[in-house]
Amino acid sequence: MNRRGIALVLVLVALLIASVLAAGVLMTTATTTRASGDAQHALRLNESAERGVISAAASWPSESTLTMPLGATFGPHVVRYADSTVSTTWITRLSRGSFWITAHARGVVPGAPSQLQRRVGSLYVLNVPEPNLTAAVSVADSLLVAGSARVEGGDASPPLWGALCNTGSGVAAVAARDTSRVCDGSCGAPAGTHIVGSPHKLLDTTLSTSLYQLGPVTWTSLAAHATRGFPGPSAVTPGPRLTGTQCDTSFAGNWGDPTRASACANHFVILHAQGPLVMDGGIGQGVILAESDVELRNGAQFYGLILARDDFVATAGSNRVWGAVIAADRTSLPGDHSVITGSTVVTFSSCAVEMSLAGTAHLRRESQRGWVALH
View 1 (cartoon, rainbow, N blue to C red):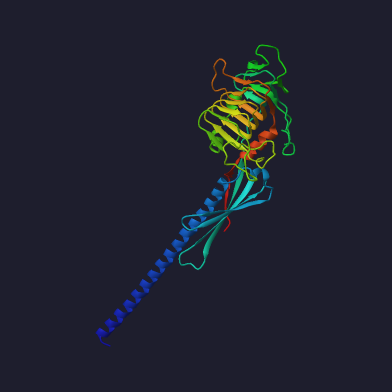
View 2: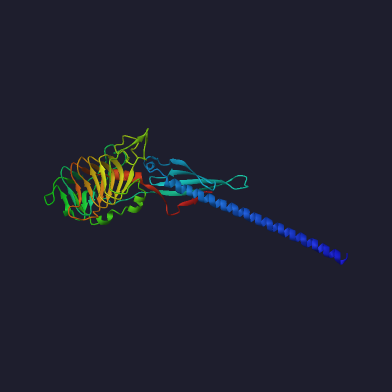
């Protein structure tokens, strides 16, 4: 064979090797690109599943806390996202205060013969406030209880609530930083019969901060989950409202039905008032957060927890409170203090407080080992 023949053979071999290398590079690039695309899609599915869990927890109906049996499952909660992925979520109750949320996300990869799927699980707990309640009425400054009004310590369940929860050993009738500023009947006179408890009056020097110490929940976070907001001075006459046979929770004046005579029996509310809030008659249940005063008049009835940064006032009519009241007395001026008169009765009820707090609690992801990839 001459040299030109050998050169031709070498050129052909070189071209063959180059072609094989080029094909290998193309195959590797295609495989890497496909794997990268699959990984990105799998990541999107994981994100969709996690978003589904968060969405289900955020939309959890608080009243279900009071009605959902242990071991029961709530769902499915379906969310469709713009990237064509879909998450389906279920909530299972593990215990009184813990829930297991699972989300199944699915989506189609372009060119793939079937859908990709991902499942994640997460442990959530009820974020229930834990106020330090030492009395039926707690005041940071002063309180006058007069007329036919009464403040009752001990512990009692509201009518028709007896089977819902247990009562405790009871608390004082009134707690204050200075019990000499708590007036039973008239200030400066001997003790009357308007403040009844064991003890009648309790010295509590922690009242300046107890309004904001709510266990795992802060005033700010509780206000952020308010069912109703009042931007300024407001007067409301609340009452339950039905649409057909269902409780109309969208109605602003529906603060639940503490008489438990309608479908709104398990509807509890968190009310956040930026200014003074007047409950002018009517009935309601839940938690009141007021940046100023809270006033009850004309036979208003509230079941639950009342937290006022300034004063609590109950005047004309047979007003009724089952639960507890804390007034922080933000403004200390002559004649500006908490007053309970008329024929108002405030009775401490751990049952009313516990039901109100549980019935308005939102779900919070457990901070330790909260997420689990199922597959």
